[in-house]
Image (cartoon, rainbow, N blue to C red; front, side, top):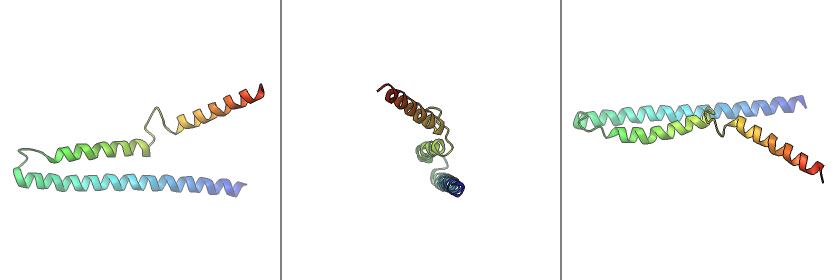
Length: 100
């Protein structure tokens, strides 16, 4: 029993590390691509019109949502919320089956 618990904790920790690696890879590619686009923008028109900011904004929103999911920053539907709701529904079901 203890080995299974230890193994399941290891699997959850590994999944968490994989999730973090994916986020940091996403962030790194964002930084690199936006740097290249900014350089191209500067070399073509000396920032008279900074068109690369449109791409930075759009992809930045994606990075933000990825961060919210990775670091559990969503105050409404985070991991804690899920656990509370699961326990609440289990308790409600237990109470309704008692009275039958």
